[in-house]
Image 1 (cartoon, rainbow, N blue to C red):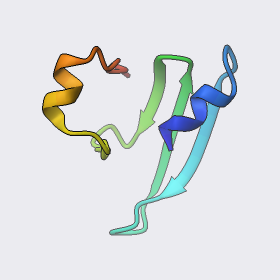
Image 2: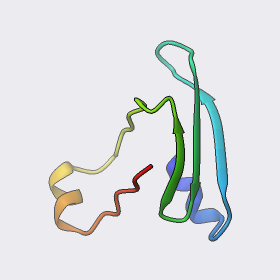
Image 3: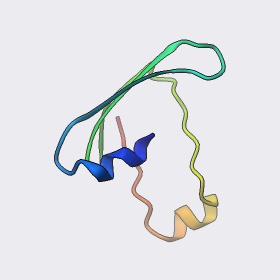
Image 4: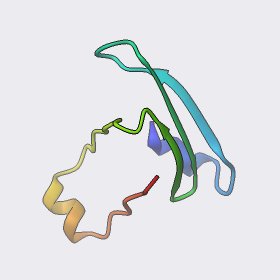
Length: 64
């Protein structure tokens, strides 16, 4: 889901979706490397790269 930001540089992206586990709504707003809003704030994500690689290869971690 966060990969769509690469398609729209400089533009605010809003994603409205639902949790695949409980069905509750999820909102994510972002622009480039910045995560502007996450609701609910307890949302977690999945990263499809090994954690050790993320730590050693300069992966950008957005902060809400």
